[in-house]
Image (cartoon, rainbow, N blue to C red):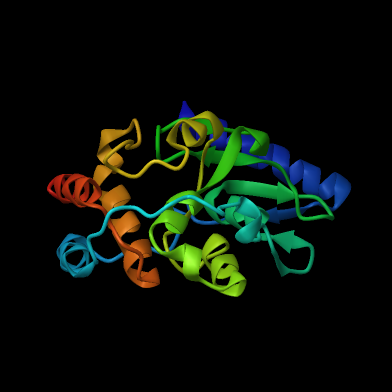
Length: 213
């Protein structure tokens, strides 16, 4: 039944393209952020992270991590991720996704409206601030918040992302347990790339999640 649904969506998008000239983009079915290193490398990277209590959130503001920035033409980072992670995504002249199918890796839910999706920062901005980003330049924080080259950005169900908030893996993990391994590997990769610290409970939780790989 799901195959039929995707075919119907694709047909609708094709007709829309013919009638309106809207661009049709058809990424691979397994479209996702660049994959993080495997479990053994992730474990080595986790061992190399500095363990320290989280710092203060004093002075934190999302505005200190400018996003979503323009990536090319009229497309900003959110729109690029929606096109990358969706199937048969159509966009209008301003690059906004007007149709497509997205499956949220956090809960396995499938959506056909871009408004039902948030672009999640794997390592939340406030968590990054408390883990070392408070000392970064604005340019580095902007790069972190718009990073398309790592597994930092994910298209996920909006209310699941809101439940996550700025929690680390000791406080929250995605509802879909089969994603535990990828979640840990991705989280570790982002923290390792940016030289962020982990607290002891966070490291314990990540070790547990890696054991599911």
